[in-house]
Image 1 (cartoon, rainbow, N blue to C red):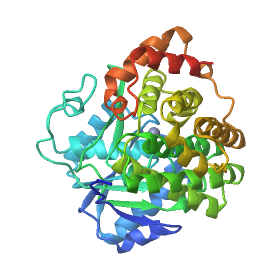
Image 2: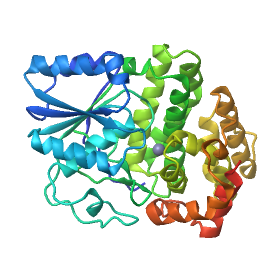
Image 3: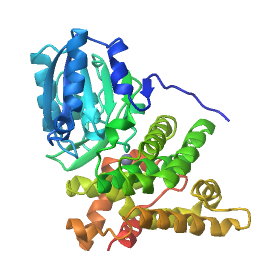
Image 4: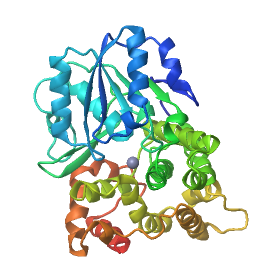
Length: 392
Ligand SMILES: [Zn+2]
């Protein structure tokens, strides 16, 4: 019963909220708009809608459209150089987590000298303090997955060293975030599933993490419940606005969970997989690891699985403590089946079994901090054991 609470982002949440941006005071006079290298922001007209709002407000902008699904350091350095050259005084991330995370990292490098990896902690990052602060960030999310609109984190891959590392501090929260579920109606079923499961794991891990607080527990359990109830419908019928809105809410709650609590070592293990195999979507990587990961922790901290099982719709009253993890895992498996992601295999993305020790080591070196968030401290052998069991 001892916690600090800090959540400085103003969030506009609900269907149609993008239109309300016109009435908001934006934190600058010229924006760098960061979008992905894909064409969806233009195809669905989201970029044009944002540009029309900025035009009407008399705010200038430049578009940077190179971001990959697993964003890389060279692109954010390029975006930051463009931001300086064009004298932009704030950054707008429009799109999924990769565009918004990149916007945050560009906002750091637009105002600071050297290389991004000078500031990143973990792996070969130098962990230096950021001397000049950063530009304000506006996040407009078109997916429900990373929760980055409601947390300070940004995840970037250093393609030269194959390190995918999450980074953030008190100043890397967005100033303003727009969560408009109408912008999510066009996300295809598979991506909807991967992103929804990413949000689910943020809440599951945030509940198991040893720094969980009463506030993060409240958000985590409600977010799990919403995803379990509404994600299958978002996949079956993508234009169901009620289902999309509930999963968007679950994702924003999961962002609060990551702000107040933390992900655990499952995320470190996944970052190793998708650092070496950038085609592997982050959410899919987590799905691959989940059965082995949560069964292991079920043997160590079964008492924490009561809340998780209940949030997944299990009637826990008649279940003994030692059986709670299995009941939770069965419910998780049922959700995977409903969402069409029960049969994913690491080998589908070309991952080889004999690479597991190397990947486990990468997880511990680059994202060691999250291993310290576990309630049970994993050894390297146990990390290899979990990742090996997850291999198919
Ligand atoms: Zn994640």
